[in-house]
Amino acid sequence: MIPEFQKDGNLPKGLYKATLHEVREVFGTGSAKRKLLIGNLETIIELAKSTGKLERVIVWGSFISNKDFPQDIDLLLIMRGDFNLDANPPDVKRVFDYVQGRIAFNADIFWTKSSIGEEAIGLWIETYQMTRDFESHGIVEVTINDKE
Amino acid sequence: MIKNDQQLEKAKEAVRNLEIILEKARKVHSPSEYKAMSEPILLEIQQRDNEIIRYLSLTESEVAAL
Image (cartoon, rainbow over all chains, first blue to last red; front, top):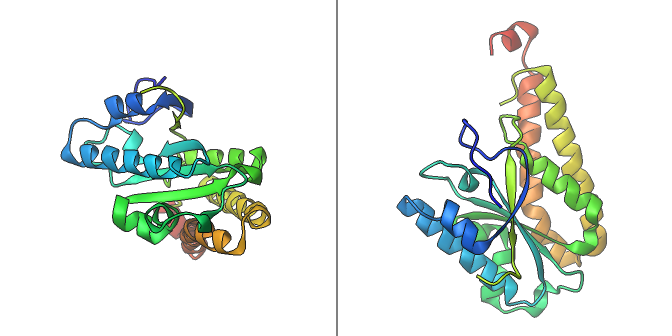
């Protein structure tokens, strides 16, 4: 469940699980930019899910703040250990190409495999909870197996 | 932007965390996958390193004026 925003417009520090429907309700309405970005996020997740290897999706940055016009979407896709990037079609592969992801989806798409280990994933989450202003904010894990 | 020594330490820790992630990632991704997945992390390390260098290039009085 997504908590209330803090006074500074960000989520309190922590990892919050939410369905894509909840993410759409909280972060995908309001400005045209938000509607554009939620559509992009849904497409990214749909393409990543089409591999059959998507395990987790973690989102951070201005998209999960209360800014009317967030800059972009920052997210981490965690794929199963047996994910093989080269076995996927070009439209799926572009999700895993940083530059193409920026151009096509206005998103900073990070990705890895769960076989990297919990310690590394924990470091990843800890590092990206801290903004460039050295403040720690909440991040959201989109639950991908729940019914929408 | 780094404004004090406490933030400098946090920035250095973040860079170290990202380096550890890459060290571990290289062991579990194929070469082509590693090239693709490491790109945004390397960019992030470069940006944070630049901030560290910029802060360390300042004198004490310049830091105090931040």
